[in-house]
Structure formats: structure tokens, C-alpha cells
Image (cartoon, rainbow, N blue to C red; front, side):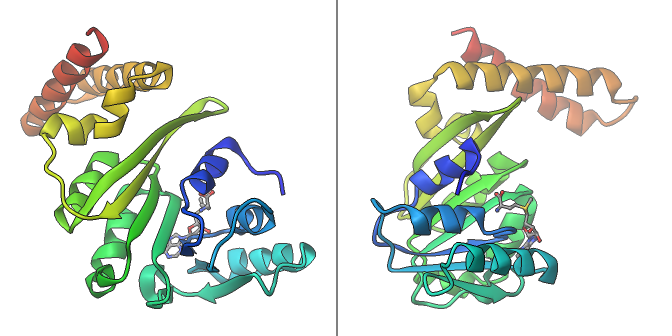
Length: 224
Ligand SMILES: C[S@@+](CC[C@H](N)C(=O)[O-])C[C@H]1O[C@@H](n2cnc3c(N)ncnc32)[C@H](O)[C@@H]1O
């Protein structure tokens, strides 16, 4: 199975010997790719989606690759498809607020979830703030360029660490790497905030203050 660079990187972050649930699996490309990798070993692979269409497509793909014994499919909303034999939850390719909602709906499952691998399309800071508030720390973070977009992937492990506002904004691990993708990503983030500032009509003072603070923070980091 050939998958895109973003999903490959999500897969790289999954621990060997883990039992994982891929929420919002869509075509189950990630799960098929990991199940086919002879160098990797997982105790359990579960792929779930809240819509019949993607799940039917996932089932066809899994059958086509003769992996129906290796990958279990579940239909349901978010963590409704979770069972306590799973230690790792992957959610990628959806909005950050949707991810937070999925986790908030089932806080009782956090007892048995050791690892979250999340790749939110937006509201990444909110996701980091929320996960660190409910008892996870950031073990690893990646910025991956795939075609013209740069995606964030964050691996959370159970445990507590204190982070400054700056660390949560940029990502504590990304800040220590500060690679080319980091510079590229935050230059774009700065540009998009400058455009929003210009387009915002009179009023919106709370939003403007927040944007100004973020722009100052980004400038100080990328010019450093
Ligand atoms: C854009 S696809 C992402 C697919 C894949 N995870 C990836 O990263 O490429 C988003 C998928 O999430 C599913 N989805 C959205 N909200 C969901 C929820 N609350 N519970 C389960 N699946 C959900 C959608 O049906 C869709 O198949």
C-alpha cells in the first residue's frame, strides 16, 4: 500500500507492540500500510469511522489486501468505538475542535489510553492545551511537508509536564528542532495572521489583540 508522506509519518509514530484504534480511518490506508509492514508488529489494529460510506470503502480495501484477520473495523462516533484492550488512539485529518470533542465525550477511557497520536488540521494549540490539561505530555512532534501543505503530528503520552505558553504555541519538541519546515510553517502562519488583521472590520478588538500577540511571538522566534 502506497500512502502519502503525512500518513507514513503518523504510522512511524505508532509504537511497536501497541494495540491501536484509528478513529476516522476513512479508506483505512494507514491501517493497511501498518498491517503490511513486515518489520512492524502490533497487538491489535482497529479502524473506525462514524460514516457507513468510508467504512464500506475501508472494508473493500482491507479485503482486497487480504487483511480482514489483521484489521478489525468498527462503526461509530469517535471513542464510542473504544474498548479497554486498546492503549493507543490515532486521530488524523480532522479539525482540532472535533478531536477535543471526541476525547471530552469519553474522559473515562483516559485511564487505559497511554498514547494519543493526533494530527489536527487546525486549532493545534487548543489540542495541545487540552491534552496536557487532562494528563498527557508531548513526547514527539513532527511538521511534515506533503505537496504544498505542512501538517503537524503530535504524539502524547500519559503523564504530566509543565509547559510555558510559548512551548504550547510552537510545540516544545518542535522548538528544540527548529528545522526548515518550522521556519516555513511559521512564516506562513505569520503571513496568514497579517492578512486576517487587514481584513478584520472595525471592532473585533479581542481577536485583534490575540492576533497581535501571536504575530509578535512568531516574529521573535523566526527572527531569532
Ligand atoms: C479527512 S478523513 C481523514 C482520513 C485519515 N484519518 C487521514 O488522516 O487521512 C476524516 C474521516 O474522519 C471521519 N470522522 C469525522 N468525524 C468523526 C467522528 N466523530 N468519529 C469517527 N469518524 C469521524 C470522516 O467520516 C472521515 O472518514
